[in-house]
Length: 361
Ligand code: NAD
Image (cartoon, rainbow, N blue to C red):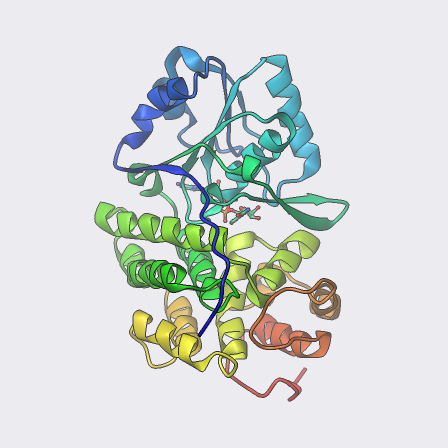
């Protein structure tokens, strides 16, 4: 028998093709009159958003940067104040969403989010920010966006490599939820539904990137995976990726893609039933090997080295990953994590080795 504490975060989700055109009505629903649109420098879809908002649009800020640097948030805050905005719209991946949350955290402004990747941040009340080379997270109900508009059409052009990496990022939310202390029948069902939608869609999207039905599966799976992230404490995998991104500047989704098969293999002995269940949903004999093979077949990334990580930094990354405790089914220490990271750095095939056995350097 298992005990658990379950929290569901309230969110209004609008899902479909072309739903972004209803953004003006959603803003009006929040009594917004002056909307600031936040995005990354590419301004992808910003003109469409602007058209959908009509006269409610008053300003845009296109400087969103990955891992939410506080200095960038301050620039966006200055724009928000200058234009006396009363609502935020973010369009883009987790980077744009993170900026909206960071501005909302400091102003209380409502947020409408239009996600164009599979990061899942839009349904969590968590914000990760970086300052002075360290990433810290905070969580508060006030950070949760008011409405999420998942418009499949805005995802059709997400390049295949980013789609695979972002999709694996979403799989990681579902996997870690399945062995979190909060796991229950609801999380279990949602996480398996997410994995069951996302994993087959990864290969399909690589073959037909603009196929709307495949993109819809990926996006719906990403939403479900995001709700797992919102309801369950994450373990070793998220901790490692948090350190790799926040302290060593690795790109978020590609880092998840390299690390996830290694963490699944690492935890496999501690949660054999969970790992077997993940493999069954994926339709492969072994979850870690199956995921690693899929990622490799679809073009990677498969090593931290190719993401620009310096080998000399692995020891420090392992040390940082054990500074604060977090739930994980298998105990961790800096030495075993360095072994895991070294394997991931080389791009070795993940295996469920005994934790104390050193890997070749
Ligand atoms: P991202 O938002 O930086 O997007 C990756 C790249 O994809 C960018 O270059 C972007 O311009 C491009 N892109 C996005 N949508 C596109 C589209 N439809 N077509 C073409 N290109 C497109 O990366 P991400 O992985 O989505 O998000 C990473 C950030 O989100 C990190 O800062 C991470 O910490 C944060 N995050 C937070 C949470 C949370 O719950 N707080 C969860 C997941 C991620």
